Amino acid sequence: MTTIQSALTLYGSPLSQPVRAVIWLLLLKKIPFELILMNPGSKGEIGTRNPNFLKKNPNGTIPFLEDNANDVAMAEAHAILVYLCRKNAWFDLYPSEPAKYTKIDWYLHAHHRGIREASLAFFAPNVRKDLVFSETFLDNAKKMFRRSLQSLEQGWLDQSRFIAGDSRSICDLAAYVEIGQLRPQFTNLFDFEPFPNVKRWLDDMAATDSHDEAHTSLTVLGDISVKAPGINTIKEANKRGYRAVMKLQSCYR
Image 1: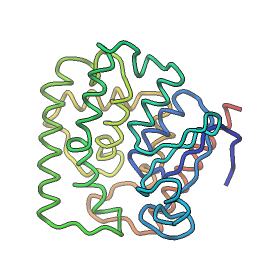
Image 2: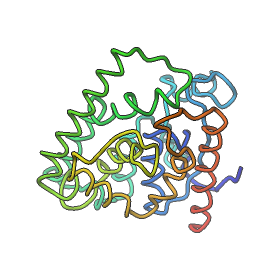
Image 3: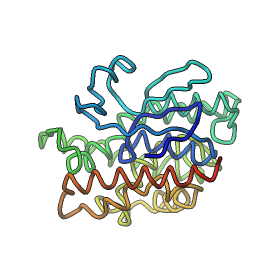
Image 4: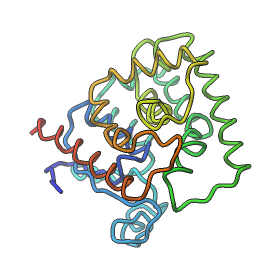
């Protein structure tokens, strides 16, 4: 695998929604970074439960970012997104004025018990072979996701083009990697016809720079609405997603 000389090292896999949000931000801003592929839940050499990785990140989660130039290491996608925007003054995606960034923070803090349920309810049961979910758990996750999607439809996206206003922000990136993965052109796991505002927003986000490269892994994974993908398909999706990211980054050097 190609290594790019960069101050940033990102640990994760392209099929991971939170990892994909960070990848998309860095591609969007044309910032080189080294991507270290990780195997979620594994104790193997590149596993997130490997002792060496747990020394870096005791929670064993991805994404995990190392900003080597500033001696910063951190986990949690939303914290990473905010850090990168503040550090680089990307005020188009995370404004400096409290009156503007407050709504972004509001969404990001609500995300994990709302829109994030998309992955737990629909994606993970088909792709994360290492996890076991009860029917009650899945049913509750689906209900939580639908309620949150309805809030986006009738509240946030009924008042503005994007979630926190009339221009896209990091909360749109965070939301799209969860919601967008369920679209027919990707995994085809959810019907968005009853949500016209969400559908319009999904199209707007899909037109964002670097969308296709950041979501290559989902294109490879394909429609999984009828049959769950095999482990080889999942591995290939992550590998080709990695290669798409590396290929685009080669233009930054």
